[in-house]
Image (tube, rainbow, N blue to C red; front, side, top):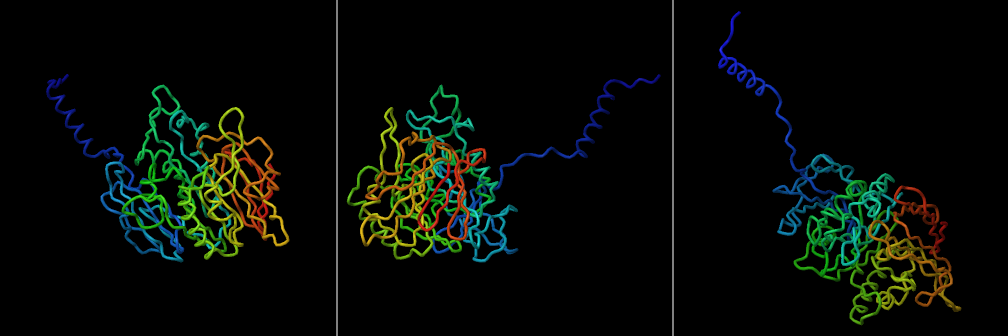
Length: 432
């Protein structure tokens, strides 16, 4: 029996292994995705902006109806935001658009289903610590997935995107490892990552909240979400604008800085001018959208749960009178769901009833105390509340048109129905 010397056997095995290595496919190496976020947002004068966040060295192109159109750089990487923001205004009437092979949602001819969310981030500030790692305690990712499954053709976020402002306390397991601060990591964790399914489902209208003031997350707001050209410096007051989606007008007012408990004259003057501008542009079928409610009722933290009303600055600036075509006031800021319906003001020459106030501030951040007192019969800014509904539960709002108004459903995190509301000729009614 022939025996090969050991050294020859080792050499032969090495040659075979080398041949197999040359012929066998190399394992795939995971690379960072080209796009960290992509979306379409609606802005002034009917513009539809496609935007992406990327770590690539240059902005990609958007394929619009088969033709490549290069995106422009909106914001270059910097220390707190080591990502590139790119944008392209989509041409009106485009029928298809993709970026890096991924589809972009296009504006609807007329909205058939609108999703409304607000106050979505995970609260990390002071003693108010939310368990960001627990989808029951912070359900925004689930809300976004459920809302995307509704197949909306428009999403309205009524403000407050970033709540991770301070580090998670050392012994708080529910938020352990969370990024925090005014930077890309916090924005990605609090908004872009959980919102991804909904960002890809439909165009958005972004409303600025008080968490996006210059003293807080304003830098990220202007870098990522403000619909106008990037400013050289952060500003706490920006001009209102109008978004037209088919027969519906959204009057977007930046009320982020409006004081809740008093009415500083300098602020009243600023917002009075903005209300005048919207009065000149409002049509017959408009919603006024702003983060802080014009007329709303909340409950104080504490054992007594005393009620408070908001917002004296905006009330003084508007004179509690809106253009006749405004059918609804849509806001967030108070972390619950609320609808207030108003009667006509008394007097022989009484104007039409105020439009109802809708508050959707229950889409993720820690909820405010529930409003337990009956709302009907209260008076808000001189007008009686004829119907009031409030719910202290996480969820999102789905609005659909009907012949003479809108029918809407408040859905829980699991998609079940919490309330059904109608909005018809400035009157609201909800069944809980």
